[in-house]
Length: 226
Image (cartoon, rainbow, N blue to C red; front, side, top):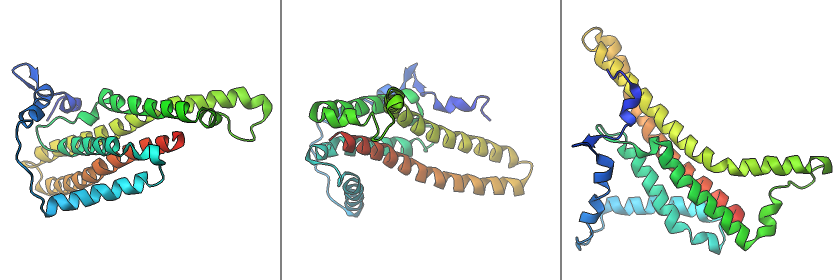
């Protein structure tokens, strides 16, 4: 049993070198590989699923917003693969780190705000003051709306971090309990194993849903500013 449950969120090291840095070198090895990938049923289903998700998220965007489809596709695949690969043993979940998620959230949120200020500044500034606000409350309403806009990237990063971290902690605690009960109580061990299996299936769903929610919120912010 781990003495510290949060040790699983530390990056593994190989010869005192974080393996996360070594994994970044893998794409370089594939640059000179000119082999073509043949289409099969799996790639066809994945492409259809990805196209369906992006179509449902971006069908409300303007022509300027549609230009973000490639960025949103890359972002969705990055978060989805990071969440799913983090469920494998002896792996490091990058999306469990708040610094990683904030690095994704802040630039994208800032880009949507800058696009709104450049393309339609009057409408973007009008969002700071809801229509029909009483005159004495106008300064407070502007302050509150400004704070809500500034809190958007923090909400994006914290939401993703909290969901991924909570699920991994539950899996770690239940798996440790199952191993401890194997030699003492087979019945309870079987029950905790069943619970662990159900929780793993739930985490698979959470990994997909959180990637979808993150990209969907970026799309909604983009829709307000384009």
